[in-house]
Length: 199
Image 1 (cartoon, rainbow, N blue to C red):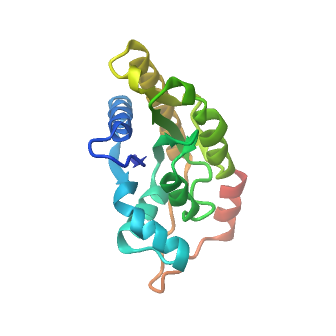
Image 2: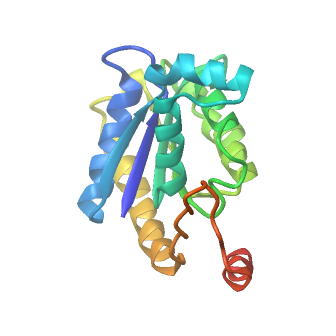
């Protein structure tokens, strides 16, 4: 199974990336996964260009393909102005509209204060519900004081377990992805497309 981790941290080192890595490692302990990291900081210029000209650069196209082809996602953002970062939102704005339909997603965020923890429920969960992803019940927020505290490890373990279970169940039911033809088009039998929509 392929797990893609989208991290919107801006600094190096980044607490956002640290949380993303802890979540990914815990999922890997619970289910054998191939992990790919997408660092949005490295794609910021290409994301801006894609928003203005409609064409992704090579690195952004690879990242979008990775997210689309994943069996599950971990998405982590720092909190800015009581919501997800603009870079985080811009990445999901340039993703194809059906790319996350039915895909298991674990949402997480980092911030300087526990007062911003509701960003998970009031901003992130609605965003991924709109994108028709399957968001795991446990979201993970890490404030500055949470690092090294008992509660964070338990939340990470619970959320990772939920994602691993969803990934295992949904990837077993997913029909094989049709291969693109030479011209970049793909042929999907009508019955297969209909069954995918019903499922």
